[in-house]
Length: 416
Image (cartoon, rainbow, N blue to C red; front, side, top):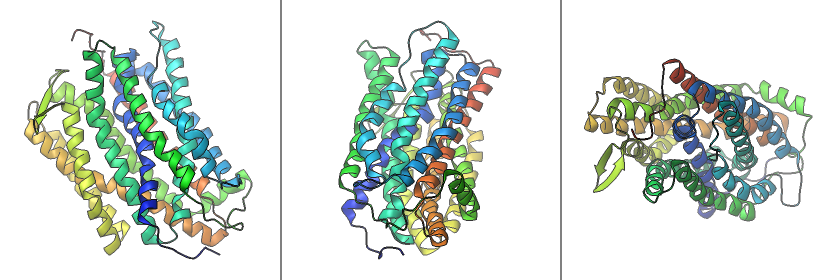
């Protein structure tokens, strides 16, 4: 039987939502800057660099479901999820720095092996905190509306983190360069700052959040049987499909747009800046900053619409609007800054729905599974969810870098 439904207090929603700050930070840093880092900082040929992302997909396929199952099966006096957050939150923060380390080697294959191993280590530490963290959602909120609200708190921190990353990261790198550091040292400094900010909330969640599952709900199945049960959950299949397609579209935009902005809009001017509210920003910071700001502003709207209609209708409306705006991107010409920023603001409305609504579906399909099986198996479901999320991002990086390589992309000279 489920425990009696209770209202999640505001402080708990706020604390839990803050945990997504770090997970979103490393995801956004990797999505927007990692491809450029590999080609323009490390110096890897794009087609060679793409295979690092491909190996990451294979590694994800191994570690994500396994950690999900372990998270479901482990039993300690602190619960099933909290030990992961207590012991791995700090190493997770260090993984931000690890991701941006690469030696100054001439051998392309040796560089590829190094950055791939760094990626795998960072990815593993991310998985060790993200899956237990996400699996807490159904444990904290036992009804549809409370889970939607809890997810919206996560989304606000997720978007706030993304907004901070896209604006602050280029500023920090530029400041490091002005101080005489290298571009890579600038990225490492970005990783250290956001790693410290991201690990603290996850550690605090491990300290203060209490799990609510019962002994009956903690009963587990063998690994293969667990995967079979998850596959039989038909609503979960639909949720996974939506999640995969949703984030493939988002990732393709955030990975390709720095190239689009710098080499189409700015015509190759690597130092192109825009002044907004008296502040000089890099072109990509201004574009993504406006987009993410609008995303945050529209989170309450999509939450309200999901409550008053349903998640399906709200999501369909948001994506239809987003698709229309995406077609308008093809009409932007070089130098049309005002038009570009207007498109960014409009796109933020649709992207907000893409951030809020797919994640709010997962606790519902997990609840449906519990009603059938009388077991709480959030770990395996969020393991598969995290696998899909990271795999689609890595596959988009792989495809983007392959296309860059075959199109003849060359790393700009250092004095460009």
